[in-house]
Image 1 (cartoon, one colour):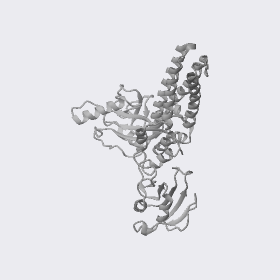
Image 2 (image 1 turned 180 degrees about the horizontal axis):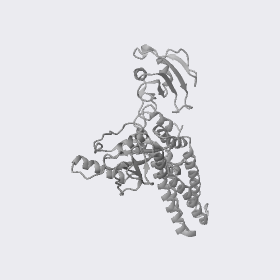
Image 3 (image 1 turned 60 degrees about the vertical axis):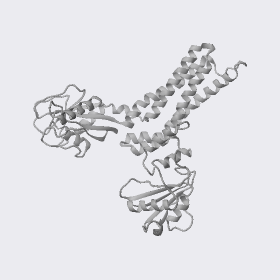
Image 4 (image 1 turned 60 degrees about the horizontal axis):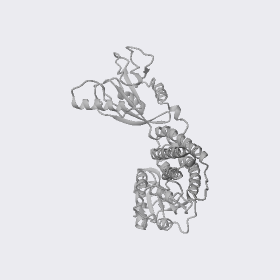
Length: 442
């Protein structure tokens, strides 16, 4: 990485803004000494014990506050280095003053994700678990949070470790066979080689199948609301979001661009999009809005076609999905058992609509938490799977005079892919990309 991992780093570890409590985190060889110069407590901080003390105003720009100081000696800390956390009142003035004073005492401001990066470099966690930290912070639904925590807890680490151990054993025996060709030693039975590769393929097949569900949980799904102007699309959008995000008026064509919001539908992250009304128009701005509406609906996982139940029925049948009969609080002009009657005014029918959305998205199929959710991991498992398929083909084509070198090369490529997942063989630019998306302080 472009910066030293031996520096002592400091940052506010709690979200920006005001709160009851704010935490400043220090990590590195000088963390304890620097923290000692910032507080009034005399004597050593007892490891893993909360010590009530004060910020020394003369060292913190005159700011004084009560703080709770906790010292976590390395290597048994989050980062693997010495860590000190100072919990103060959650005023940005106080927290920024503590960080500035720590910097004046020799600490460096932490880069985004640098604390977790150090945990990875110090082998406290592997790269999969480090990425799960970011996913857990970003989780918008309980299902996302549970899937991320499972990976942080090491479920994927153990699964990949088991596959890698079996692959390593097969590679070691093949290498021994290649190294002693003249002696006639064969440490792998030619007849069982394809069978052993098949067992590895079965496990990667399962991971890839799991990954399809996992990607949906991690990235979520997209539901788009379409319909003619003034049928109640924006009112429905606001009702599902639970906040007045879209402008609602009696004037047709109020919405001219996409308005999106992330909502929780039965535990699944769903990006809900309100769109411009679908109609023929010569207005260049409305033309662009209508085109964006059609494009958004074309790539949606589910389309809600809204029809005004109190007016003459008109349904755009170009889109497959659910038909929502809006304005159910008014006298109906028509009835359709397949349409879901809702009222954004009274809330009638909204819970049934959520249930129908969940059913249409097959949310129940996602209830079992998948072992793998990250797109990077899924792509690398796919690369390993392809290499294993080539190895199996080489083993079968060779028969009893199998070309062990070719099989070995493909097995080594598969193992490289697994090592890139765990971080044992990950390029530096990939690491920088992964940790750059973290917040500062984590």
